[in-house]
Image 1 (tube, helix red, strand yellow):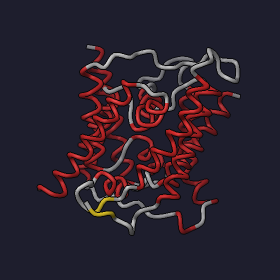
Image 2: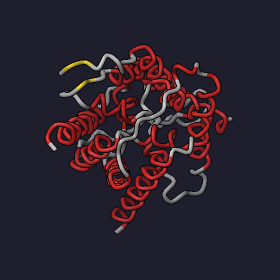
Image 3: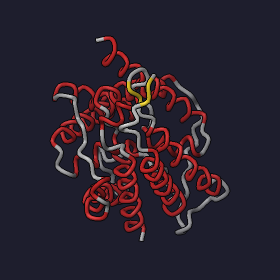
Image 4: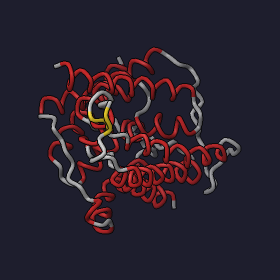
Length: 145
Length: 136
């Protein structure tokens, strides 16, 4: 293992993480809900009466975020995303993420942030599982294939 | 009032994803590449988020309603079933293939990023697939 110092951004990442924690904190304390993206999105398939509006309001905030960020953040923090995957890979990855997060009842936000923060053994197992799979797949793709 | 707080929470969460670097699949894959050029940044994202969340959930566990007067729903399930593990493994594999998890993909899609749009469409299809299998 060698550290990729040129891409390492401890302060921005820590500050971003604090914002993720803050959003999760506000959501449970003000709205009484767990902030889990896959669950919020999956609950709209199909949309149910009296259960769709809060999900859509949250998603509107998510969709507004990049525009607000580009307006307020210094240009040094606005970097173009590097997306190497081609269309076929994106489709396979998307299908796996959609199916997997619904079967596993959560993703990086619901299990990885909220679940670990509330010391849930279930979320710890889920987080270890998706991290392990992520490490394994990247190892195979980058170092074996 | 609730619609406003939900919007603001979504906005703050999205800003956190942008600032942290999570919306850059290249950065995510750099973190998952333990045996290559490893970028530890995402450990700082998780660390920052969990520490702040820890205090909020410690407070939430002592309450039955939220600060706006409604219900406070903490997950009740403690079962570690096969589907939790298998689902999470599938999710992790997809995450490792493209470097997108659901939140960052939605944020990137909002900027008109075509590849993020393709990923999100496939992800929604996967979620529809889950509903169809579950309802059989």
